[in-house]
Length: 339
Image (tube, rainbow, N blue to C red; front, side, top):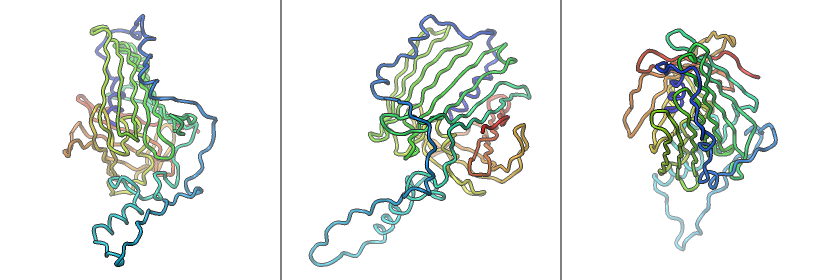
């Protein structure tokens, strides 16, 4: 979520004077990343409709039971009994809400549909700054595992492009069964910079890797590599805005999940404040208003209030975002939903 706001605010950099994207004769080299390609194999798969989780048998396998020892069965302590119940009946990790799920990580109702596209208008001080688009593309296989393909685009409007042009995209691949991200690929094309970034979350080995190549007129070519330990079931900074849609968001309840970004393991928290009517250019929606927070190292990191409105239906579309930044408030609101 933190990085999503960073991407949104790129459209607000009105301090430049260039009308065009930055030119770099070695721009193609920014995309080359042999180390990433060695770790990650991405393959397109045929378009298909995922089965509803309710139609699939999702019961967890029976726990392994140690053979009885001579002398009978030792009575289990209250602590061990409660641990067993949690292991069998609560979706992992325990920090996350379990309503709407079986023991499996998959929700009973899948909110994501291939072909979905939600287009927002981005405004700042009442002026249209650009468009923000959330898309669900056809499935891919990442290292042999079926994965969602979530794509987020942001483009500056003609008004803001006269000061600073923005055409950014991030693709996020999320495991279909476990709902955890494998990869994101970030492409930034702007008046002030060109950047290609890759991230890979090894969910088995609990290791995260991040590669970045950037070119700016001021500093020239720069590269960055970062590795860190990953907590189980962590989202990345871009998958989190999609992942929040799998929860029920009952009014008055607080929801939380892990996010790992830039070498740090943090927690996203959101509280469903109220149900409301939201009238937009895409139509009128029953919506749930959520206040979002980021918790880091046990303390709330204040970066300004952020509110998110989602549709109060099985899709949980992102309908509106309000984020207070250093100067003013950035607002995005839905303009069109496909299909």
